[in-house]
Image 1 (tube, rainbow, N blue to C red):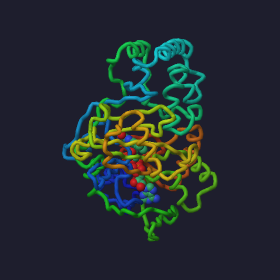
Image 2 (cartoon, rainbow, N blue to C red):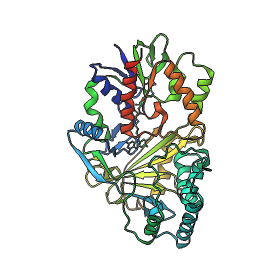
Image 3 (tube, rainbow, N blue to C red):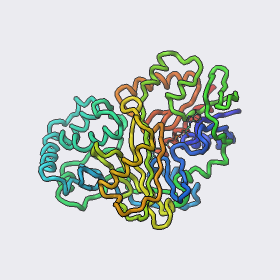
Length: 435
Ligand SMILES: Cc1cc2nc3c(=O)[nH]c(=O)nc-3n(C[C@H](O)[C@H](O)[C@H](O)COP(=O)(O)OP(=O)(O)OC[C@H]3O[C@@H](n4cnc5c(N)ncnc54)[C@H](O)[C@@H]3O)c2cc1C
């Protein structure tokens, strides 16, 4: 039986792993000249390793932990996550709602008063229609508008009132008043971030977590799928080859998938066009010292800072940098639907370096050893108010074509790596049970 998988990311490899239990070696087509999708890692000529956006494994799933561990032969770092925030010159621990200590007194007072008042007024939550309503109800207006709504505008590229809440999960911590007070009065607070510990391969970057699965597939790199005829069960590849399949599992982004299928009905095309996702420009910087920050990553709230989040890859593994060096990866977000990318990615390198100097992370006397940029065309699915209905239309159509979708951009969700892997596994099971 010819099973074809589109895409060589976590989801594609999850599907392949599941198929291996049935003695099936799938054919995997990958558009890029490297495998791994978002979990790819890139070694630079000057000795740095940067992932395709910061990647750490914080899964609590023992089975996935074991698989990833086997893939790197037990060679991984276990780190206690340290995360902070930068806001108007203040550095505070994350999450801000339970770490207000040190912020301007008037602001802290207002946040606490509204927090107490809001909790009393919004007991039943019945009038919460969007993410902004939810933030107001959880934290009060001042905190919501000063922190998460500012961050969200940069990260999701759209306003909180245009977003649903079905992506939240444990992502935003909702404290009780005693935790808010404790964090306002003391700097020593418990760690409550949803990522408490994480693992990262000691060598060769995050992509090493996929090494073990490579023998399970027949991998074709630089082989983008550019056409699908679900009736004939045929794929057309970027080099014009036509390949037949019995079963098809796709992890490529839904908007692109719908565009390449023959004879898609108009309503499905229109629905796919409504699905919104951010693009991310990654600016990678290496400098000649490694004492840049104690944190593993930092959130930036101020709109005038070009980046939204900054991570420090040398803190994940010292093998990500030449000896003594330090590294930073800045994420700058855009989206076709809400905030189109209006410049060439390399034009963002200097603004990012300027902002790193402005907040003091890069000093005038530092030597910049490395600077590069990479565009990530699909980053985070935007949970805007159009997503849910549009997604149902697209998924129902694909179900009818027996195209099994998976992963962050097939399920069109907020999946982490472990969830994408497992999504690939279940898509493989579904395709095997299709008639
Ligand atoms: C900036 C950022 C940071 C993240 N950090 C973390 C983290 O710290 N920890 C964590 O667990 N998760 C993290 N994630 C989420 C994680 O990256 C995803 O859950 C996971 O990697 C998605 O895997 P996937 O296989 O679903 O998609 P992808 O990795 O995108 O794989 C899809 C593949 O399909 C290929 N493809 C597309 N079109 C075609 C075509 N026409 N033909 C052939 N191939 C095609 C693509 O090139 C790609 O390789 C992060 C995501 C982002 C954007």
